[in-house]
Image (cartoon, rainbow, N blue to C red; front, side, top):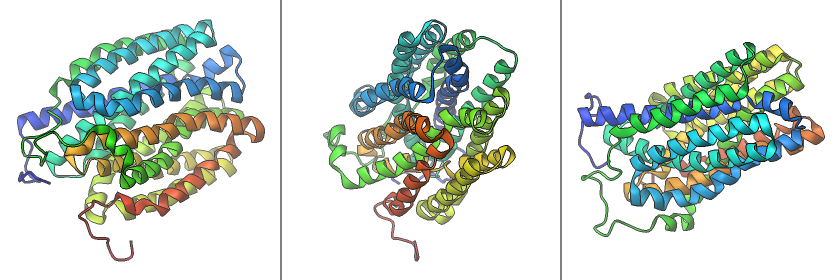
Length: 402
């Protein structure tokens, strides 16, 4: 850290404003995504999609993000995280309008809307994580996971709203149009308080540092990206398939299936909020390794238990998967001069799993059921546990036994 602010002292007005704005950016992104995810079972039924076809439709989101994420580092380096998030929130609102039309008219329009959603969500995600790293450095506390708790809080709100509207039989299109208006108009206003991505006290070379694209050649950055990929796969698979698996394989009602998704998200939110003191006390590596074990235990309960046990499994799965993504973002932003490029790379690799993993689960689920296909998540979490040491800050010595 290059600042000298007392981490126990309250932040100044500009830093406090930036902290609030960053929370709102994360909450808005989570609310938008969960609003769509909570209605996947109804869209699947209306358009008569089997698991394989639904998986291919969901691949459109991944395609949009895969295109946006590698370009977001240079984009943010040029225009800043504030303007990037503002513009992408508007674009995401438009994408929800297109998805709303597609949910009622056919697959082609739906796929176009989901592609645009992935495109805007990818750049928005990197932008808000870069800003989160800026605030975290200036606060001198491990607060990134609480920003991601804001994302999870948004997803809980979106999922609960979705469950309520499903129970009330509100059309998918009407639901998504309302969310589009809230996100497209509210988020650009909310993020005006973002700080400059580079603080005057940050140790940045006079020439601005290396190109954002050079991060793709850094072994540590790529390993962090692989770690985040595993946790993103665990999170993304849950987001898209918990409701479907509960409804199809555990035999619960659509409203209860959506409630199971909300349980997962609530557990993730709580764990992300509780994470900073643990990270500051014990360090990144032991905390995320312990949580990976917890996520695997929850996954096994979800797959092999009865519906009641599956709800407990969803809770443990959500808590265990909670810190992998935010801790990876913090690790990628350890050097402020290279934060935008490295966060872009890590997010790109993570979102390949976050958005590309669910279609893979769909294709496997078509052969062996969605529940059994979800066991792939456990394999990736084992890989993440093995390489977790790369999250350690470059100047930090390993703790004994870690």
